[in-house]
Amino acid sequence: MINKDKRHPLLEEEYPEGERGTVQITRETDYAIRCVYYLAGKTGDVTMVEEIARQMHTPRSFLAKILQKLARAKIVKSFRGVKGGFQLSRKPGKISLLDVIEAVQGPVVMNVCALDKKLCRFSNTCTIHPVWVDVRSQVEKILKKRNFAGLRP
Image (tube, rainbow, N blue to C red; front, side, top):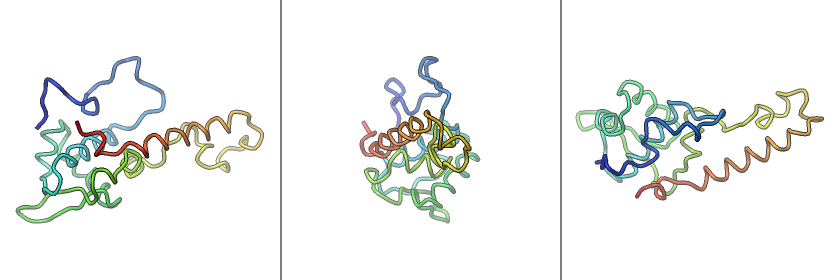
């Protein structure tokens, strides 16, 4: 259960104006991170979509689709039936923020050329290209290091 007086920053609906950037995770990815965060606190329990949606303030139908993506990426396991629901497929410490982001929205990139040089005709001569590649590498390292065991209070 979330203590509303001490909400975790991952659960905030809006981020302060100065903290917004031009490269953002999608709302879908934000919901996925909230979902995995919640399930990380329910280690071993099978949790229904309705409970996750209610506790994480996410639309139930949208969350069900997100959970399907997380299941395909083997981040969560689904269980059918009356006592069905979802649980993490790995320990929270083995699931990184990068795992969840990539499962939902694909690779983290500042510029498409950092993902694949062939997608930009200027990559071979562009002096900025190595910067985008370095930024992508650094962001991935940070997101890979941050796991859901470390995010729990």
